[in-house]
Image (tube, rainbow, N blue to C red; front, side):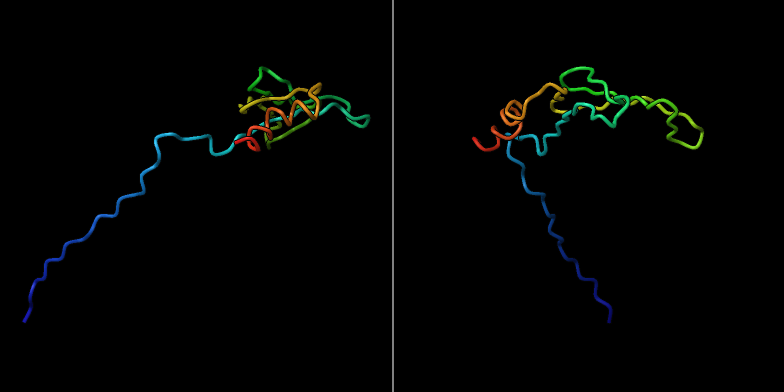
Amino acid sequence: MNRHVKCKTRKLHPKRLPNVQKDPVGVYLRVRPLSTEDEECCIEVISSTTAQLHPPEGFKVNRNGEYKEMQYSFKKVFGVSVSQMELFEHVAKPLVDD
């Protein structure tokens, strides 16, 4: 005695996201000044949100011995002259005030 039973399967709906979305994670870059041990800088600040990596002289990254200069985007790029207070004002204080 075989009976076919029809069942309704409930569809699960993902939770609705609020209309106002914030950046989940803010990624910042702070370029530090060269120390006395460093010979050359491999980071160039292109804009307030972009930095480019340059290979140090004679540096090989992949098996072919080639190195491709890469640009990376951040929420904000801080150069070598930024103070600790300026960094705090832009990065941490908005989180504390929120």
